[in-house]
Image (cartoon, rainbow over the protein chains, first blue to last red):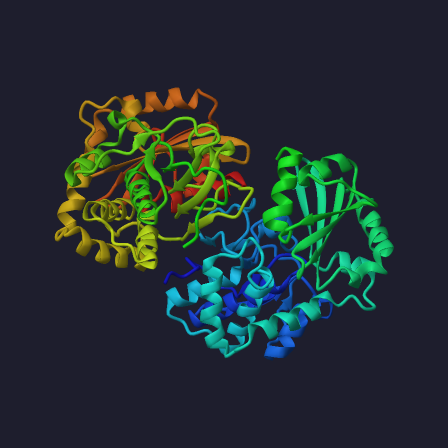
Length: 319
Length: 319
């Protein structure tokens, strides 16, 4: 094992996932901070969200497993930080470009982070950061605490949509088998349905909060494109608030964006009702070989923003 | 194990190290291509050099271990490539930005490569890419062929200057112990001295070739800075060709560079005679707290371009 510190006074490493943290960003921050602690490094799990604003799935899981929510983190200028679940500067905390990034663990495309010194950068094309962290625990010979293992397990079920997402790999299934045993979770189907219920609950939630529940901005050939995703047990859940969602998208689009997309993903039917507001609707239609009706189109089989929506859009935008 | 291919016809992956390949870039290309082959992926070790132009250390080692030189590679537009020992686009083959990068294994600072899809990106702050590849073989449960292990072992001895470089870590020493056994190399001191002799031979070599033997260009706050390094058994070896080296540096500097530095590293004394041509010599003096005399200054303990020279320069240039 190497030390992250080559001189000076070691600072506590803030371990943080992407903005609008999902379950992988929350529990991978906890899991990596715990691993670093076990290896003698001072580290603190953090998140770019107040505990009160956390997505309902992650909040339910933290309560269920008796884990404290990661600390909210703001400006990281000059701080030692480790990134989980992202490597794009614009998905990080304020002033990430002037922080001292000491490590990255991720499963997304390689982002625009650069460093002045060599660091640990571990990315693999698997379904979840939790899968990579499970390998890192094994390679380090460190035992995963039961509650942390339960969180990592949940993150994998969440990111892979219970193995149904095209991002899911054999490695993710192996990790789930490992983590089930450590977490003493016998019924992952029950766990996944509890997550789905928590996550897809829209009752009384303002439309704009729903849009931002799992939302990311992307830079595509000089244009700003926002993409939100709501995973639902069925589309009926949002039928009565469709106009409100469109109004929220209008508002977000008016703030300098070329396009705003909202993926209403039916997890059971395995497809997405893609709602689109764009300066160039034909370009978005072309990206997915679909036809918009009332600003929306059904895309059979679309489950993953990262693996399906973003690459198709990048191609259409000429990135 | 995951596959790099999600559709279409799989192409052979060209595995390539940085320009002006050193021993790590050469043998890590061979080692990673061999690992990919063992995992059922078509892959070919490549290098950004003709076999005839390869650095004398690597050429000696290929002959000693009976390995074929990696194939020379040129333009990689649209090809599947895996990078070893670098992640900066400007250190790669022509049109790397439009290639399909499927994997990176590296031990340098995180460069400016970005991708459109998730890939394997494995970087660690260790002394040599070969050390990381040894871990990857172990994790994959794949046996390393004897000659390949000998090459990886040599790469680690070369990059860590026989464990003397400040970049050397415990992980590198563990890898050397592993690889010694597989390679059936008993005396690593003898191997290292044979490498040093081959590498530091300057007899009859044109000064410009010596400058470019291990040379990299860097972008520092908008200015182009070239840094070459010659590792020597002693400084006497270059005493008679000093004027020729300065003339070669003048010529390279005149081609749009703010500064050209040549590290004449005395591997036995563990320090560097740093030769400097710069538009702003005081800035370079400040970077290393030294004073140039006859365009050169002795920097005690300076062994590593990556860990010592480049970070100090970046600080001085305000990167």
